Image (cartoon, rainbow over all chains, first blue to last red; front, top):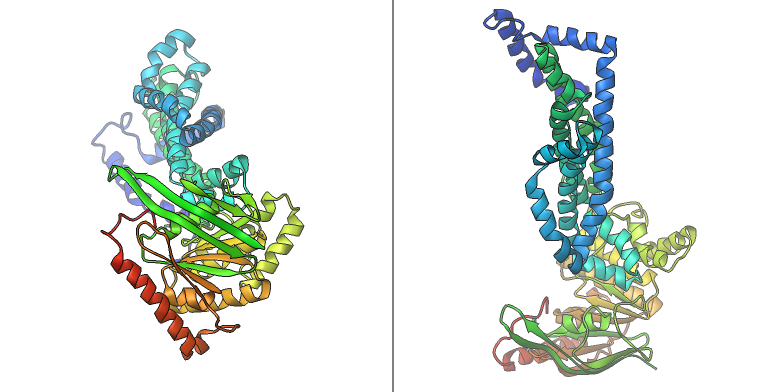
Length: 257
Length: 268
């Protein structure tokens, strides 16, 4: 690819969309309160930052996401290793995983609201629940796709069970584990916003729903744009570098540029 | 002293697709002496890989016994280094860390094992590639790493399972010459499995021909060719040609006289 600032290059595809949006808003087809232009959203962004509301809400959402993903990974990866490696573990946990995966995150909300009420516990449960399944399922897949010869090579070089686990199984399954975390993060982010809308008292999802109640369409749009932007940042600053440092370096997946 | 002793070894396994028992190897007895280079050749499906996997301890024998330096083989262990057909290098480790893996398992400190690993990387002619990852190397280079990794662990016996079958013909000849050079320098005990008769004769002190289905020892031929050996000399050498012709006839004969074509054992 040609040179140029990477941020600028990724911004380029959005230019026509923003121009179209601005043109429709300008034309006056829709009332401005319902269909504000890009400049209104930018003004609202500046205003909410100035008031300190936006940084607080963003911080709350991000902390919830980090905690949820952290707990989901810390429980999901070992569980996936157990299910992938042990036939007993597989027989016991697999039916449970299939069943509870199907129940889905948001479907838990009614009972969670009864048990825990509107608040952090409910939101944390939903996000951990959402992150857990892609991490577990992909870890199992990763463990099972490790070539038998890797294990045999390690054994014939004197590795015992524990060494094989962390020298062969974990790095061998890592490409899938990263895929699982990536999916988990994506789904978890959506589940978080949804649960903030329903049960939250702060956060980006809450801000959007609250703005709807107050008829602040600019803030609703601002929330939507922030969700997309934040994902872009998480993807570009955390996930892509992580993949480049590990699985692309090892040649497990091809680089896409 | 006989280093590796195999007595009346046999392997029967249940073929889940065919739904019946298949005998891959039967009544194999052989001895390999310390410092000897022995090849096993035979038509595909003769159970030579199964035999090697039993010696490696990856697959338990159904009958018979395998003794290495007097001890019975009961599973994989660092006394038997294995070089795999598909290299089986760890893609997440650099060349140096792959070669140092066995030493790490033995608990050698980092400095020491890297020093030893460097020597073996040099032995296989890969100095300069220590920090590279396997996917950045050609097939021939990857198998050099595979050989270095197995040798660096100083095994009593080196098991090689068609190690040069997945590289191109030119590279294969270079690797064969380098293997004889390494063997002449260090005299590791090698059990080498191949279906390539030229390769077996070129490399070995002794070639064992397995018959087809179930695999059993059909003949043993001593290879008395002088060392060091090189392909440029061998292609002209009448003794080499005669030995190849003799082994080939035995392999082909065992192929023709075999009963109905047996289902292949896994990568037999």
